[in-house]
Amino acid sequence: MAAAIEVEGLEVSFGDVHAVRGVSFRVEPGTLFGFLGPNGAGKSSTLSVLCTLRPPTRGNVRVHGHDVVREADVVRGHIGVIFQDPSLDDRLTGRENLELHALVYGVPRADRRARIDEALALAALGEAIGRQVRTYSGGMKRRLEIARALIHRPRLLFLDEPTTGLDPQTRRLIWDKLDALRADGTTLFLTTHYLHEAERADRIAIIDGGRIVAEGTVDELRALVPANESPRPPPPGPTLEDVFVRLTGSAVREEGASARDTQRDEARRRGAR
Image (cartoon, rainbow, N blue to C red):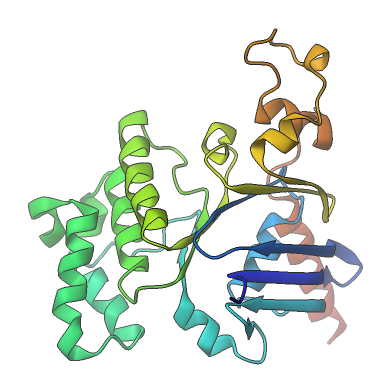
């Protein structure tokens, strides 16, 4: 069986800025894979390539056996994406957002109503589905985004900080729905700064400075930190957060550094024309 994701020697550069430096990893179908790193570590650049939003500078990336460059359209049919920043049209109702997504992804007319009804049940928005999205709370929007991403029944769902800013009750509800999707065979690829959420993962890779600095199960990663180096006496011993800080350092990273590097490089290219 082909891997859900197979990455070999991935490099992403913006001029003289090297965001990703020879990254390789594999994600098995039906698993939850955590992809963790500090701000500016290369997570977003890697995710952009996996979602076919940016071609790699070097390396090979395949999703369910399909090359993300040569077969980008096929790959897009296999994936759903929950972006960190809201991507709904808040001038439309919740139902209209679902209908638009079904149309864009070519869901057959005969199947469209059933797919939308499934999404409505997942979103659990009740009568609010007929209101403009601008009236929704953050949790309602997140549930709608997850439901929308599943209308075309993707085999792989990318989750970019899916519960940022949500209250504990809404966060738990969303994870109940995501756990049900994984149990049904959907592969989940998670980036998050909530490391207690990442502990749900079957396997985790930690990226820093554009390189994978560790990969393994949660228990394998915990074993990298001696118990006497953890600020918490056993039990429970080292946490995933202890591992993360030990591997990537304790310095606070500047938010959005990679994005600014990209903007700077693009500005240089425009000035050179």
